[in-house]
Image (tube, rainbow, N blue to C red):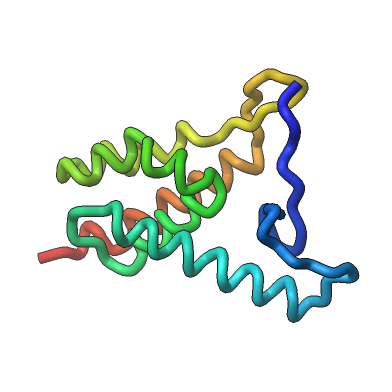
Length: 130
């Protein structure tokens, strides 16, 4: 049985490098979130080889933060986006609506809703391009 990753604060995955001393304060949780989002945003910026508006970038960072940088880097979504297929890339968000529960991939309503919001954000300003 694979071991589950332990998290703290607002989704920070605890690693051996962390020097966290309980209890975690709200300020500590915020600092971890800011550092994690900066790391994910940097990875997204390096991986995407096409022009993005701010909404597209924000949606991709949200997705990559949730699924992990490795999964994002290996995703069909990123491949489609880098090929210039924006609508095909947007359609890929919905594929990331599952989590492993008792060893099985299970569709979760919360992830389905999150992916729908990310897709809307991703496409929000895309049609306004001239």
